[in-house]
Each structure stands twice: as C-alpha cells, then as structure tokens.
Image (tube, rainbow, N blue to C red; front, top):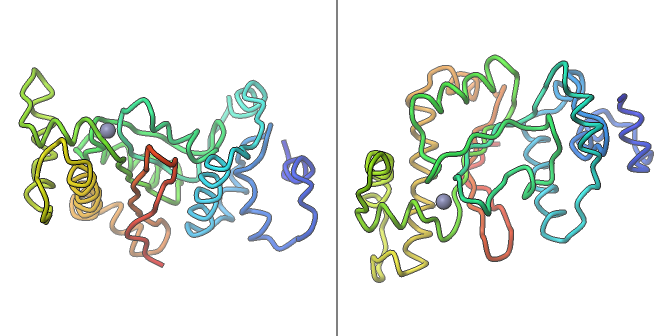
Amino acid sequence: MKRRHFLAALGAFATTRPEAVAAQVLTGSTGVLTKEDRDRMTPGHVIDELKKGNERFRTGTMVSRDYRAQQRSSAASQFPAAVALGCVDSRVPVEIICDVGIGDMFSARIAGNIVDDDLLGSLEFACAVAGAKVIVLFGHTSCGAIKGAIDDVEMGNLTGLLARIKPAIAATTFSGEKSSKHANYVDAVARTNVLLGLDSIRRRSPILADLEKKETIQIVGGMYDLGDGKLSFLGERN
Ligand SMILES: [Zn+2]
C-alpha cells in the first residue's frame, strides 16, 4: 500500500513536510513500512513514533489494524524501523505497548532483557543488515528475572541467565531494604540492568557503536511500568 493510502486512512492531509509524513507511517492501518518510508525517517522520528504509540496504548486510542492485510503486504520483504530487546514477561509485548503493526519493528525477548553474544548478533542484523534505526533495550517493573537474580535462584539453565543480571545488583545504589519483596529496589536493579545493557551493547559491538557514532542509529534504554502502561525512555542521545 502506498503512503497516500496510509495518510488517507488517517485523514492526515494537513501537512506535506516529508519528515511529518514519514513520522506517521508507523500508524498505517493496513499497509506496512516500505524501504522509502523507513529510510526517510531519522532515528529521532522513530523514537517519537514509538512514544506516540505508547501514548495511544495508554489512552486506549490504538490504531485499528488489519493484520491479515499487513501480513500479505509484508510477505515479500520487511523494512522495520526499530529493534526492541525486552523481557519474555507475558505483560510486555512491545508491538502492543508501542502500538505498532506487522513489519514495523524487530522484537527480541529474553528473561531479564540481558545482552549476550547471540542477542548482539540479532541487533547487528537488525541495524547493520536490515536497516533498523533505533535499538530500544527496555526492562520493566516487578520483573521476575530481576527478583530471581536478587534471590540467588538456582535452577537448570536459569542459573546462568540470572548470573548475567548479578552485575546490575552490585551496581545499584539503594538506601532501603535490598530485598526482592521491595518493589522500589527490584525496579532500581531493573533500571541499572538496562543501563549496563546499553553499555554492553556499545562496548561489545563495534558495529553498533560505530553506527551510533555516525548517527545512523540511536541506542536507547527504557523502563516499562506494568502499573500504568508507560514506557519511559532513558539515556537518549540527541
Ligand atoms: Zn521480566
């Protein structure tokens, strides 16, 4: 579907500025992002659209999408604008909480939204090969993986995964009770875990660090609040 159809669906004829047009493509109801649509967006535009999408989610004004039409439109190719790395938690599906459609963004999920070599490879694919312009690494409140790491849970392969969260526990300054039962502490560790994850991406992926330096991409962190549905962005570089 051509862009004019996106705009027709939105009734968005008020402006013809290219950046304004590009900034609305993520709200297409039946079409999907074309390469042209995606490439004319700056990383800042993409972040703005994700923020607007989260606002629509929070206010119950999500775009009504025809997923079958989007599936058909995207079958031959994809030009996602962003890649998210979030937790497996059933309550944090990024496509829903950012109100995007099929083909709009890559989504990688792992308990505790940790960064390992395979995930870095996925992020490199998304940005350096497929052209995504924004990496959103986000944690969430009341994260069970963070609680498990705080509690030193040991179980099968989970033990090794939780070990990757432990540096965030050591790096979190907190004056209250450091317990998995203390929500503020758990969320503080989750936030530190995101910040360390951002550092890890930049340090361990010269490819992504270089794309960020060239301003081809932006790497941002976020915290999602299960209570109010808000995705807050951290560490943006403008
Ligand atoms: Zn979680």
